[in-house]
Length: 142
Image (tube, rainbow, N blue to C red; front, side):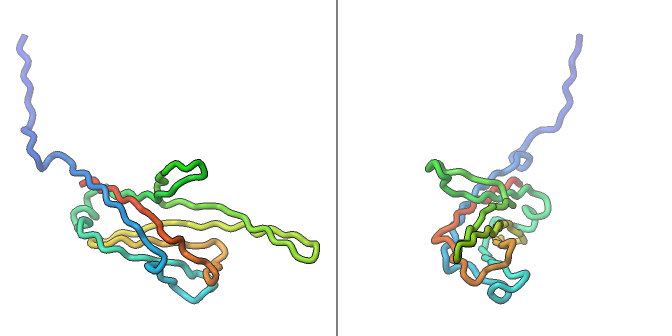
């Protein structure tokens, strides 16, 4: 019995590269787009990322995660985009009402940068105070 194996040689350029980049966005880095409480208003932050080359953006795999500490004290990472749901309960003069809302976190990439976006379902952006620090993790495979 003769077994012939034909294949191409493997070189270092054939092996996918993996890059993990972490970003911390502080309160003052968020910019309000639109007027406060205006329909369509949202918060935006652009970060320069030299590793996001045209080749990575066009032919690679890009995934971003929102990192936070959960109610049990564990650090977790949630794939983006993701939506957090909440409810405000108001009481006045013996009447109580509920206001459900959500916050949607997303990101856009372009060669050289990543833009993080926070959109509120009710667009009530005037009284929102950004967290002291938001942490995001970017995974690149190229």
